[in-house]
Image (cartoon, rainbow, N blue to C red; front, side, top):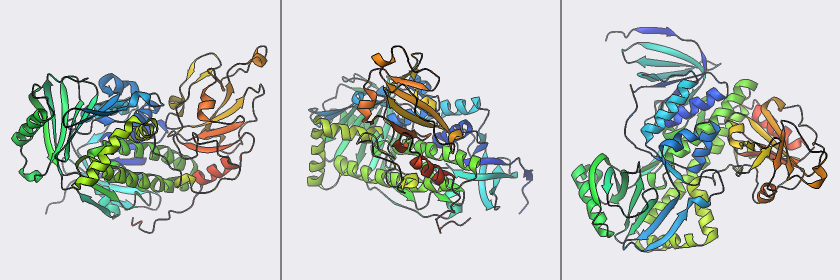
Length: 555
């Protein structure tokens, strides 16, 4: 066997990202915003033009707002504000109304994955980083101070890349996951999913909403918009995927339109047809000695809840700021929390997907009917709010793990709307000169924010303790201006006003309370103004050098 040409070792970087899909690109952007030097490689010469995963949840849009990209996605996609549920005979069951969400984004965004990649790749290029395509990872060697990765180029040359950390964003057949030797366990569903991205004429319902029909035969038929002319049709069949061809898919969808009384709707030319058996797999460890897994490399989700891609993007947002803190402070404690926080999220999503599967196409008829009855409960405000929290991914949080696993002295609960480990709810403040305060943009996926609620008091609370001050942007939040402030109104770049007088009440924050928000938008600490013990405990956790606790580390 002839030897392949061998390249030279290249300039070391902080992080090597393997895989340039939406998840890897999001990570590279967030790392750049955290001041982290990274390189991103992909074995493919280009990305697919197919639409693939095309639903972006409101929580993912919040993540893109932190990166300054949300408006680019909104300009290109269709924001579906409502999900309509029908019986087979087109009788309305209920509506999931995302316009009632408590946040900036009142819907799920439909956008082709190829366009998502295009927006992210352009944003990464603006940060001076280009995807290195045609470069395949073959080996990772631990060097004590980092890792040396062997990469083979398209022309057969072998190069090495030295990096402090390596992140596998290389999909379900991840080479990175294979190299760290972690188990990847799960199962494949027996139902065959069929999908068509296809032109459709004569559709009588709102073309920008989603529509789901629950069929008596024990399956479903979902229609969602792509661009106003093309739609995505989704259903299942109990035929082996190997026996399903494109002609069968088109016949099946034509028959389903007739079944639900839409025979007058005409199907045009398909852009993409596919069939597959959904799988749910989860890696045993998401972090092994400085090597991390994100997205499909870490977990494969059933598409039934349309949350797999979104979960991967949020993996990246969780990991990026932690790598930044670790590189600035030399600590590893914050990195250990990545697995502790994100692994349970994937497990809970598996459980949610399993319930959805039983509700929509479960083989047990009685159980399926019982679960389908829950769709009628969407008419109840409390059940509807709970479902919105799941669909939007606002419910995702870390109340019992990661950086929140230890009790924090000096902390106090602020109420059911504000809990440590939960996503910081949407709130509306103004700066001293009347400019709207953009909390997500201020976080930027790279900064901690400290909101010090002063109420109507005119004297600013004492400053935060010196430790961690360089990591925090501090703002003092005053209630709406009162007569007491007529002649002595607080001013300054760090002053915010709750002009409506409702945000603090809606958040149920007691006066004289400080709220520390992590760069990814989750509440890191709650404490009384002036009592910094909870804050000190938090900084100890994210800057500690506690060695990794995973005995399975093999590099």
